[in-house]
Amino acid sequence: MSPYLPIVCFVVTLTFFCSESLLAKSKQDPINPKEVLAKADIENGKSIFEKGAPLVGAHLPFQGGPHWLRSQGGSCSTCHGPKGLGNIEPDFCFLTTPPISYKYLAGSGYPFNARQDGSHPAYTELTLKRLLETGYKPNGIEVDYCMPRWRLSDKIFNDLLGYLISLDESR
Image 1 (cartoon, rainbow, N blue to C red):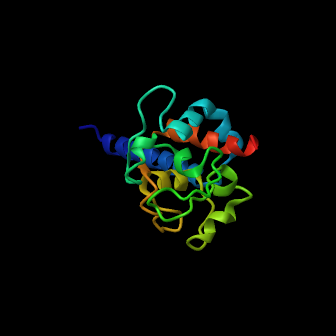
Image 2 (image 1 turned 90 degrees about the vertical axis):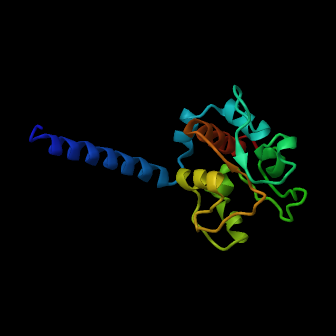
Image 3 (image 1 turned 90 degrees about the horizontal axis):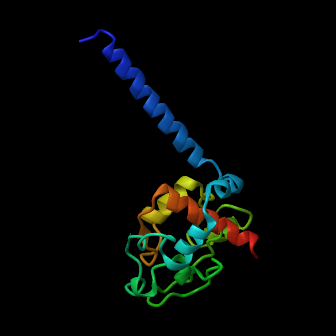
């Protein structure tokens, strides 16, 4: 065995963890709408938002949510409305949905979402994706069972986030 092998392994491991740490850090920074929009496919994000499926491919897999959600298409707009403004009381959920466009999640209208469970930081890319996948807000409080937990690739998430940002621009 080469005497340099342990050193090479250490350097490779260190490089991997440092790059992962920098990537995670960038996703913990405030959402930058211009950066998201530059890499997002807005039409694909719109399809995900309105139909629960990308332009090409099957419906996105999810767990939880109301029993009727799959039969209604399983989309964000089913509960949060066509413009993402919320204020809808989905059947059997016993709550009013919050608005979910960018400005209400992380922008100028953000404090609206803090009214239901106490304050939590504005969403970052990391915490918003975590919410959609696990149901936990940045403050560690779990959202209602009516909010489905989705399985999202980075591309699907970015396209959806791009569309949520574009909703504010289209009003």
